[in-house]
Amino acid sequence: MEFKIEEILECIYESLGYKGYNIVSPSSRVELCDYQINTCFSISKSFHISPTVIGEKIVNEIKLLDNFNDYFKSVEFFAPGFINITVSDKFICDNNMLLINDLGISKNNSQKYFLDYGGANVAKPLHIGHIRPAIIGESLKRILKLKGNTTISDVHLGDYGLQIGEVIFSCIRDKKQVEDITLEYLSIVYPLISAECKDNEETLNVCKNITLELQLGNQKYQEYFKKICDVSIKDIKEIYDYLGVSFDLWLGESDSYDVIPELISILEGKGLVSLSEGAKVINIKKLSDTKEYPPLILQKSDNAYLYATTDLACVLDRKNKYNPDYILYVVDARQSLHFEQVFRVCEMSGISKSTSLEHIAFGTINGLDGKPFKTRSGETLKLRELFSLVREEFISKREENKNLSEKDLDIIVNSIIKFADLQNNREKNYIFDISKFSDVSGKTGPYIEYTALRIRKILNENKPINDNLGSFIENKYERDLRIKLFEFDKVLNNAVEERSPHFIAEYVYNLCNLVNSFYENNRISTLEDEVLKSSWINLLALCYKYIEVSLELLLIDIPSKM
RNA sequence: GUUCUCGUAGCUCAGCUGGAUAGAGCAAUCGCCUUCUAAGCGAUCGGUCGCAAGUUCGAAUCUUGUCGAGAACACCA
Image 1 (cartoon, rainbow, N blue to C red):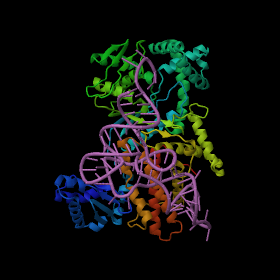
Image 2 (cartoon, helix red, strand yellow):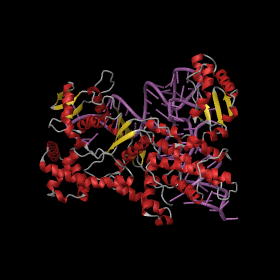
Image 3 (tube, rainbow, N blue to C red):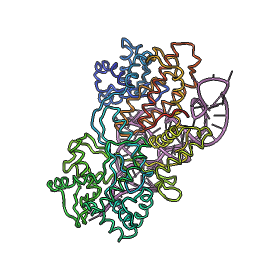
Image 4 (cartoon, rainbow, N blue to C red):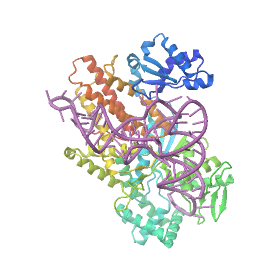
């Protein structure tokens, strides 16, 4: 909508010689106006004229426009330098088509994004720490697609590091045959061996050696490795399915191993690799650095490869196979140094040339004490446990909830968890409060779903016949709603630029709030004016679409009833 | 120790590239169901944006300092 107003004002700015200052912003004082102009101050600075003089001059020119009343209800100057714009109802109605056609979404980008957002570890079941990358990554993927980009997603399993060596060691020590390995066994054994290795250096060394042997292709270890992956991936897939999170590629660290020789020859060819304490390292310091950067370790002194090596090889592989414009790594903020190291080596060696690498960092999930979340018994909460906790809590809220179908319950549980998470700014840590997560009133997933169901009921009883929104506006509830719909594309742009879905969550909540106000104050069923009735039904049908599309971006479905 | 991130209402969080009187939800108090789902709508209460300087017409937002919390810092991922 802002750009429509800018179009109208362009000739004025041009004639006054203020080209480039024609910027219309959303209103920060909704009770005063719909839109505002704040650029009088910057014009003032450049031209050394008082902002009041400039503002009044612009306002006067706007008022002289031939079709002023078609566009504006009022345009006022406010000291010391604001211009407040209230658009006319006619202008809103004249631009209906903007809303109806593709919900006003401009497909203004068409780039290729590669998203890396799984990071599941095959040695252990998915737990609370895996929820953010999954839903933030999936949400970003959907947002980018809606704006016209192409996306490729990769789960990038953690499948070839020390943790696998540790699990294989346990299997052999427990005399487990390959075919006897089960999910239950894996979930018990990993915490045990992981703890043991922290205390017992001897065991740790054996595990490290198994990891190295595995990487070198040891037949027996490979068999264990494959079985562990099979068992684990089946479970991981089930959980991602439950969350509605999907991937185009199910690759892991192990898939990058074939590329490592090519990687090393490129890096050595550029003269970047040096030996330090027996390990092959790359010095990533720059002259402009103000802080210390440890070198990236390419190959350990025992010849095994590390996380950084596979990540580098992986960049090379993705470049070769897909050549994306961007690679987004949706990974915990605590790994920012790791990515800084990897990205620097990519830049120094040129292997990422013309592809932007971005670490889409997110904060950790903490408990009520502000420390990383643990269950009461001090363990990490598994995702399946989270789902059932929330489900039980939701059912306990109301007697009738027991009668909901399994499918609807799953949809609602998903909405509770996802909306609670995605409404936060992704970069910050946040406190995981199970009672907050399960809350169903206020700013929550169920609130949005409830709103959608209220509208759906009306639409089922009054089928919209056409798209027409009507060429007049009856009251402020209708007006507020219509203005809100124009905002959607801008919200999407923000979400893309900031790589953060919380803009969408904020928007759909506010939209639902307006829809509920409209609902409470405008009763459609008893309306006698058929023209108005039809117009309102169409408006609600349109709002439903906006809610549906927004929710889809947040990986939330609408249940059949609540 | 060095570096990075964060500090906004009792609690949990928004605040878009510096704009006008800093916004939501929860909690608390109150009002609204013979009428399309009250998991709703409306109202009240609640703030020295950690603190102190600086930049400028204007700072929660930018800079510096300071206090507090968290995280990362060479062969784990």
